[in-house]
Image (cartoon, rainbow, N blue to C red; front, side):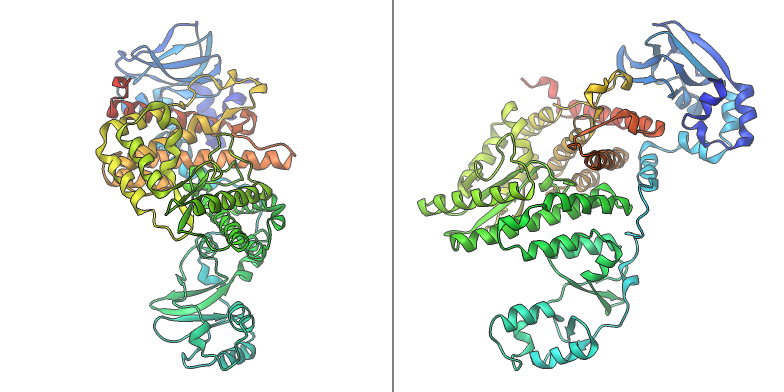
Length: 601
């Protein structure tokens, strides 16, 4: 291949316009370095060239320790060119190396082209943010960033609080609408579902006072709320009508049918299906439909974190549906309880169905409670399996993890006060717990977890446990075809989740989501703002890559996995992936030093 043809295919040279090519070609030098030689040295005054690897590979070393490996198509040497400082790393030829390079004066002229310059001058967080936002995955005619107020087609209809049900129903018929808003404080709402479920089904007549059957206060959102946020809010709240406010007044009301017109595979469609479920058998095919929802949201330009929240909200509703059915079958619970989820579902980061992570906590330790909750747990776990959630291989399900609150308190205290490394390896996901159903308050557990910030040994052991997964720093080309690609979860997602968990606990934050935890840690100066932003953008980038590949695998009829084939990545994505792994590895090293994990047994 002609050298210039190769160069033009690589990032960021592919961003240069045609009139820059003569300069690129005139300045190109071809250089060979034998295996083991140092291309750049930290003791050099400064670097004089921008390098592009044509054949072979290099490793970046600091104090003799390999930090990162670069291979064909990747550039190096630019940080010292930009800073005019000595190279930050030794760059060693891992094998016989053929490079293309350009002298500093040519590099400076090429930086006059904005797109090319931005590749070098923007930080990783900003480049990943642009990459996450600019990726076009499909042609779905829906803008999920659209202000939801733009979907309003008519002004809201109000009725007096003194109206009867019959009078309100006449107003709904005359306006051909499915709901009316009720004046007064707090504002109420009456929907066609209320008429069906709270009036007709209860045998009440048209003279029934409106205040007896309306919902109050009505849940509202600002009209400026992005479409995807309004959609997620309606799913979380389990509502089908949403009043919108602007400048202190209600300007309109939208229904779930508006969303379904905007998007054929809407989360609200699946929510309606869950509401109609009368037995676990009705849930067959839920997993496939949920996959369709996730794909539709991704094609609509939604970020992986927002998709995770929407999908997790639907899964929460699935669990609530099963628990309601279970209570109908078994009768009222003998004591208050809470059903909790943890892991990715607890963090609201589950985009596709994975194995179950759930548990059950009940108040009074009685024989009747033990029998009841054993049956309830079995009913719900079996229902989740029928819906498409495979059982957890490690047994982290309510059928095994089912205890009275007092035992959970003892367990959490033991983890904090006498932390054992092997136990924390398994227990750390419990610190992501989130209640989804039940009346039992879990404030005692939250208080215990908050005390973790004062337990130095616990935080250190948790930090050590979080280092079980390390990002790969070797050559991507050494990954064999049978390996299935780069393991995105082990290499990046799990380490970032673990970093966020430890720093958030140190910051006394009760946040559960990874992004929210990193933001909380930065606010409390447990993590630098730059470090938090980089991890947040890397997390979104990795989650999106994994989701994209998992959906592609399902379309091919293959089971989804956490591995991404290298051939599915563009050269720029491969570069970003390596840089993200490097940043995660360096943040892990910083955490290890901060908590002195090397001193632990």
